[in-house]
Image 1 (cartoon, helix red, strand yellow):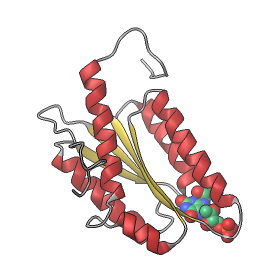
Image 2 (cartoon, helix red, strand yellow):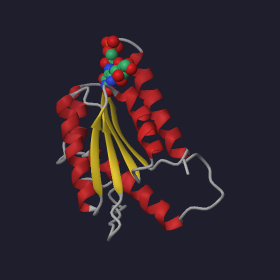
Image 3 (spheres, rainbow, N blue to C red):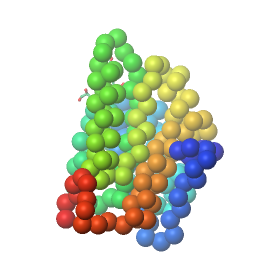
Length: 167
Ligand SMILES: Nc1c(NC[C@H](O)[C@H](O)[C@H](O)CO)[nH]c(=O)[nH]c1=O
Ligand SMILES: CC(=O)[C@@H](O)COP(=O)(O)O
């Protein structure tokens, strides 16, 4: 089903106290980015949550933008969107590995993040994953963030915390 992080894991639905999500998108490839943002919007709205979208130049800037917004403590979760297509040099590896690792570290430090940064060999692969009627990776990333928000609310918070969140 479109938007599901996994076919067998329905996206949580929120009744009241709508979660606020920030979509951070790197429109390095504008058409691909727009499709993934559309998928994320649809998934978030269907779950009864709200969203705001900001743009940064490239995938390497996405984690820093999330850190900035996380420290502002205005959002319950984040969706990272972008597209990295291999070029002639090893820069592809840097962009892919550093952006994904930074996003994972932010998650371990307390941010509820779905990672929808595509890392592909060519535009055909990107298109198949970006289109909402296709693999809808933007919707899937939004679904992942929504799952983590629901988990956070279910477990609540305690004095014992791993990670950092400004009081
Ligand atoms: N080649 C791609 C990039 N490269 C740019 C970097 O993400 C970054 O903006 C730059 O190195 C300045 O810090 N970004 C993408 O999102 N996709 C690419 O295919
Ligand atoms: C993923 C990239 O950074 C890549 O698009 C840059 O292209 P190149 O490796 O040919 O400089």
